Image 1 (cartoon, rainbow, N blue to C red):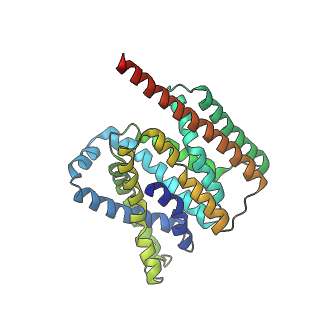
Image 2: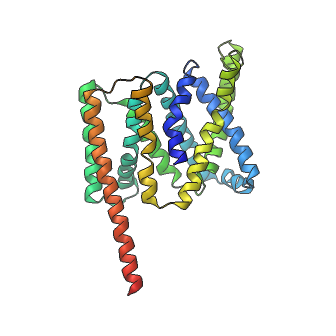
Image 3: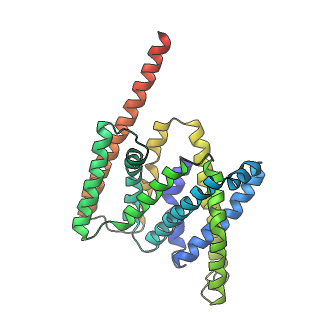
Length: 291
């Protein structure tokens, strides 16, 4: 709950630093994250496992791709919050789990049960509806949903914890982030160090705010059932949506109501199917054990 609630209120942080250009915020998020994560890796005695990831060529290549995906996801989300489009961003994170289901069907040959197929269909209808109403696809929602879904699909192939994987990813991005900050500084466009001490502290805290919820998530995932995690994951986009409408004053239109309504019905069907299937599996296992 701590992880998902933290992700749900994280837009408050990005709104507080909205005056800083998106690419500079992204660079700070990468640079301070790698400092925090490397320190955490050393403190937890995981350096040997971390080094093993870097030595494996296939894993390095996969993590290079996931690095690009997570950087895209972070950048678009930061920009969406700063530009007052958090409602559409939250829609992307509602869609994400069902996009993941669809990718599992396409790439991993995973079978879709009837309610899962209906859920994916409802998501497609919601996207088509918004496309027709906007005159263009809901790009923010789709980029966030698909980048994170593909990120999850590829990270599934990497034998590493979320913290270790993110450490490698931020380490790969850190030279670019540092070069961007130095270049901005030389051209007098860097906000960091030329702003208030409170803004400097906020930018430096990006690493902890990025990595700590992931640590909480990794620890929680080890202790909870998958179906429990499935229900909890909707706390984050729910918090983002409430912040967007109540705190930030973004419009929630009739078109939003229709599209979100379709997504919520899809998520309800998907969650019901997941819970029912897990319960059936437990009952079958119990019956087999008794026999």
